[in-house]
Image (cartoon, rainbow, N blue to C red; front, side, top):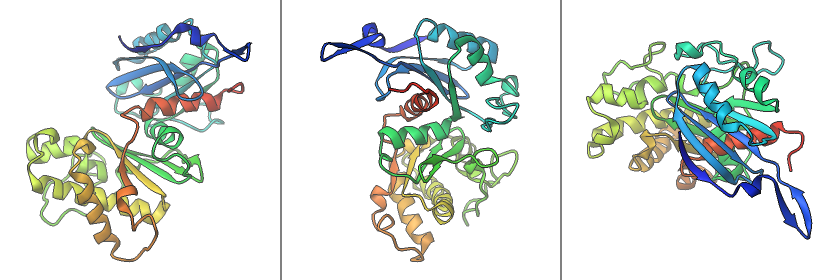
Length: 316
């Protein structure tokens, strides 16, 4: 385990204000990714006091590492932003379970139950991308807005969506990386997704880029055709989201979006595809409408911290 931050432990117990001892609520947060787990404790205002990360292993070993980290931290509640799919229906007998994930050892694992039985605290859970969306809405460039989309484009593609200030779940939760797209006229790549081939993830994820071009995205920065085709798929997906969900901002993160040359290409393609049909102040200012994530890749763990705060009946 690598300790990233370890603030003064006294902050966990109390703070003096006008001569009175004021109890500071400490919350736990987990950002559960397919390859890496991040754990943190923090306060209600988003101050991270301590954070660690470790590789994702099987559920038994990983759960033990969670418990070792949170032991004696006196957390009031725990928030989890998890890879999915996840059962988020609180009335369901499998609420908090990981469902049919490609990570076979995690299939049908009672994520919430395994931690709640040991920690005995309220737990809030959502998808990793919904948690990231919540992080940006609470502390980042989505603050003050109620209709926000956060999209991660990396090993996979997913989207966290907030409508009227509420994270979108519906019958399960959004699987926005699997909307079907029209292939670029000069792209004959069939798609990497084993379920849908030419869906957003199948055509524009990091593995799709690497399989199509024979090199990783990070090594293709100077190849203009790569990013012309990539921006075509991303813009096509964004226009679909714009037409259906009418977001007030679209935030793009993930490893592929570290290629900053993509942003002007995407904005240009979005304008072309909308073709004058919609006229809003947001669409007239695409530089501030389609934007990179703003929290230095901490949006996920900060969102999980906010999930913990919302789960606690004692939030300060």
